[in-house]
Image 1 (cartoon, one colour):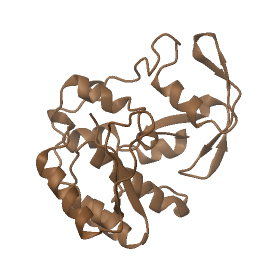
Image 2 (image 1 turned 180 degrees about the vertical axis):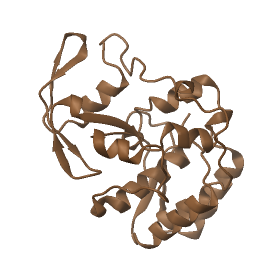
Image 3 (image 1 turned 180 degrees about the horizontal axis):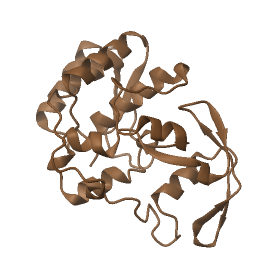
Image 4 (image 1 turned 120 degrees about the vertical axis):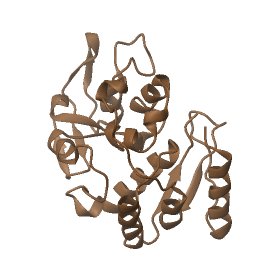
Length: 225
């Protein structure tokens, strides 16, 4: 849950920019508050801390799990692919996806079939670990790795772009499609705010510069339960 200190910081940012108000809560859960901030303000709400990779294992984050409907045979990855398909695939027994077409926004490519895509964690698992997830319970790490409540948390993109990104933050990697830089940065910041993750000094500087280059871009996020 979002800490009292972070609530105060968010409230202060909202007061500092009174023209930007909280947005309505997510359609799937009207009890969850949602905040919208100018990107420059949102970046400075992120807690600053050194990153620590000690003890990281990808298996510390259970994924993919059974998704939102454990009885339909579709895991989280498949649910993201079904949700983001521009031309929906046929869902065969065992949740095998046939056909369909997807737009990989990182590199501006149309892709088919489903096997040509990866489902990217907007903030990679290793980066999340470095930024605070190492202190979470296994259950919270599983929730993070399978976050279907907010579309930006998990993104269907080309396997090539996802593997090029790997576990890098925006100081190290940005999408090759330069016209989506502002969107990508906004979604990165929103994900870190949603999960209460920190940034290190180099990452904050990069995000600050990106915010300056994206005037008018806002960040909308819902604190994770």
